[in-house]
Image (cartoon, rainbow, N blue to C red):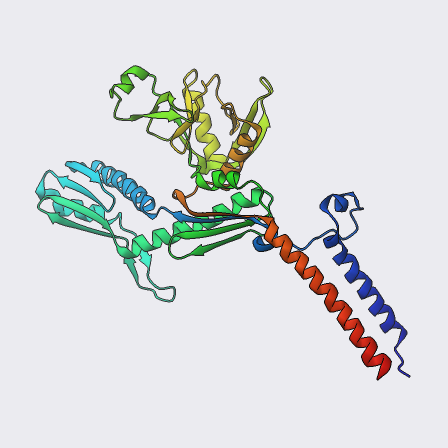
Length: 397
């Protein structure tokens, strides 16, 4: 007769009971689990998109927007370098692939080329190599004309970096929704696959991922009226921007960004104490709070536009200096709009816009059929094993 030590029997029973306890939450509803004591196991198996249903999106990062932004920034750098050294120039312009500028005095061409070479930064071509290439080709393409062109390696690096950064920001935005185990991965050069099991509001997901969420605080230009601006009479350092409701609310806003959304460290939805309407409160880091305080202190009684993705969401008048590094955004939001805006600001801005190439909503019906078939298979398998054990060990054992 077989003999088993008592401690082995006890250990086997304890492990078996624990296994049953940890498996039981998968057989009851979530409402039943929430009513049970907190010390009991309550973790359920997270089902994937094929079993639970959910949203499937294939996104594409607009790589050309990344290059265009680099060209615009480079144009400003060229202007600053040439003006700083007193070199006369004309015809400075940026295209989707290059920046061109004409040097007025050809005798200063060599000096200008030497100065502009400082705008080119090295690119590491190999992780294990000490050699590096430059990101710009700067040359005199025609007599008196200097062109600055991004190298192919620089373009690839910027697109790759933008996609990697976008993946991280997309992950932060989806995590704020409270979903479990989303799939977010890169596909190809500039595409991102997003699968969110159990999400019952795919339109909200599209809204969150479809916004770049670039926030900027800019002064409203009060020197020109809206009627003049609509006729095209706008100062060179200002531009006409519309509100979120379309062409109903145009604003003439200074091009200079006084404080950027990159300086935000937190954003939370809330309610106004005066009107009880939904708002979004925000907090800057030390440097952003200092700049925000200086701007509001120097522009009391002047409108201050809050621009999100090149649309004015609010343009309040500065009543008094805001020196604490905190503020609030109000714009007739609903509760969900305020919550979504806070999510976007907390997660950060995308480096480039993204467009949805493919969209699928997977219903839970097919998954429910698969789960039911799996349960039937498990029951039949368990009965078959028990029958085999009875026959094999009961009759022949």
